[in-house]
Image 1: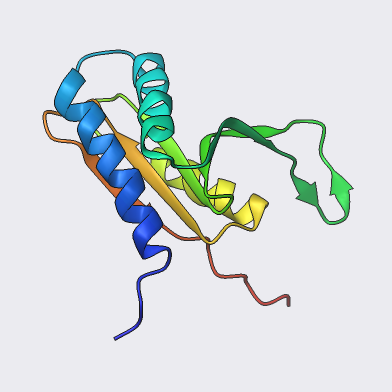
Image 2 (image 1 turned 60 degrees about the vertical axis):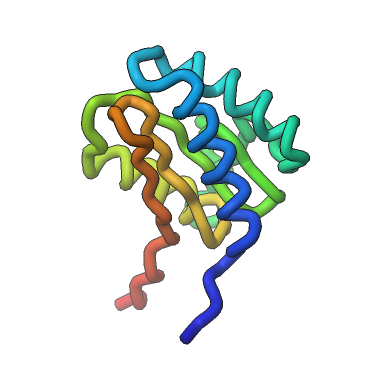
Length: 131
């Protein structure tokens, strides 16, 4: 059986998010969860950058519009937060696009907007062969 990518780091991130959800529950706006999770990451010694800026390269051209992932943890895991009643495909696509553009190999989509914390482990898309 293959080893889970960033296993210990993933447990730490999800553990921090579960704690925030246990304390705050659902119903707040996303910014509240951002702030609380940053505090919890710091408490647990999880290295992170909040609203990490990435540039997008399109065939050798750096695009003017950047994107910001909510958290970059351990310099290798993208963490995107939501506070919505239901995760939609567009939310998953957002994280997958971040991974494709940044070169990161793992992302989490964490939703605080449901009675139980919802989280998804996402990976970059496979590169299509050029025709």
